Length: 191
Image (tube, rainbow, N blue to C red; front, side):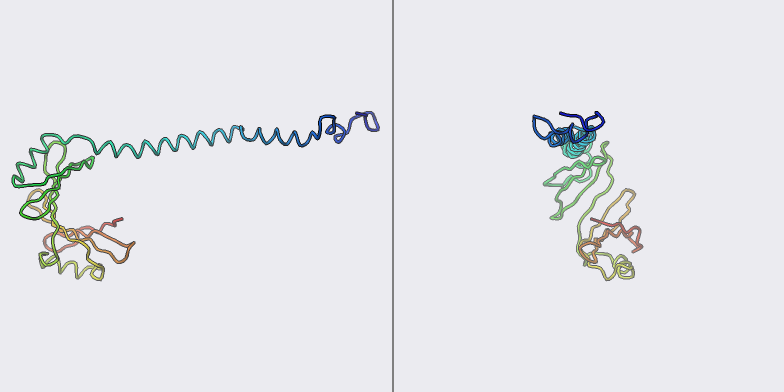
């Protein structure tokens, strides 16, 4: 290589050499180096940790379903509903739910882990709905919504409530909770 005028090597002279085009080799090295920059390694670690977190989060509810139903809870069901048949249990983390048949009807009873009874739910028809609750629903702002399900909920202290599942369309759905007098207590959005 010969120096340009003034005795110094120019950039173009420095880039040219016997081994080929140096700028293309530099580009290739730069591209390889980009694959191992701290930012790309950080992103790979972040992706891995996120994926691992997602898998663990999905596994926790699955393992929660395998918790054994305490003997106090099963005894409480037998005591409250001795004629219950076809009993199956679900662990809802805060309560245990027993689905069972009794008198040719389907029920769901909820108990806490100590065996204390929390509620019993039974599906019912519109014809069996008390007139006060029908009247309360017909006077509510949801009267023009479709009625998809009716449930009678028995609570401690002989409190009876009625849950009406209503929908305006596929997206707008609600659970309406009425007391025995037909007063709307809550209107929860459902998914």
